[in-house]
Amino acid sequence: MAANQIAGGWQVTVYDVDCEKADAFATEHGCGSARSLAELGERSDVVVLMLPDGRIVRNVALGDGVGSDGLVRGMRADTAIVDMSSSAPVGTRALGEDLGVFGIGLLDAPVSGGMKGAIAATLSIMVGGDRALADRLDPLLATMGKRFHIGPLGSGHAIKVLNNYVSAAGLAAVAEALVVAERFGIDGEVLIDVLNASTGRNNSTENKFKQYVLNHAYDSGFALELMVKDLKLAMDVADACEVPATLGRACLDLWEEAGAWNGPNADHTEFARFVAESATTANLARASR
Image (cartoon, rainbow, N blue to C red):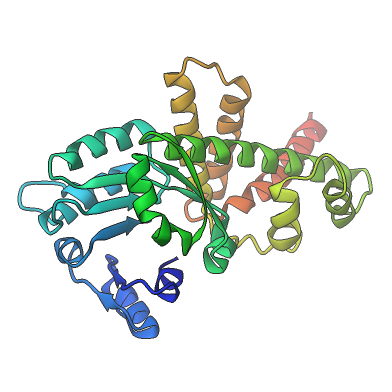
């Protein structure tokens, strides 16, 4: 994403807690690198964040204690932060109010499209926040993908986690269908081909099963624990809107079980491996009775 900003003519400074990673990127792409969040803020008119969760986003923006490093220690009034992470929508609105005290604007602009979309600059970018600020920053966002202005601050994060709920449910359905099909004697690739030509087609059938599951690669670049996090956030939104979301909660339970089974650092496509192994374990348990 940063490389595409540079290619689009923007002057970019990068920061990462791993200084060597930031320096290597800066050397490769001919951009600057900062040694602290305060320095990054001082050198930037707009700071784009892509971080694991909203708690980290808040700490990066405001600092996590008295005298601690944070973007606000360097940013000027009339600058802006764009949070492209998947964060809690309610927390995003609270952060917007806190940044407003410093005269700093905030947009939430989470993305969908994975590593492939990030590299190709074809991400779907879901923008929440003040429309005037969104229009002002649209040329920057345009370097990374297609923009959709969703509504007020927090709306982008809300729709992103709902999108990931639908994506997770689709992957789960295909994973279960794959186990059934193979046990019935149907080749897994044939199943995926038929689904992709039929009404069962979804993002997982098109972009995940042949690419990462059937070949046992399980290296899509998106962590299983992050999918679980987004499902939890989606159910938090459902709670706030007083919607039971029965299927969503069952989906979350299943993904949490897959996370515990696969362990930390698992790719989210390893959910399919969990489903297959669980079916085998269930059969063994029945056979032993």
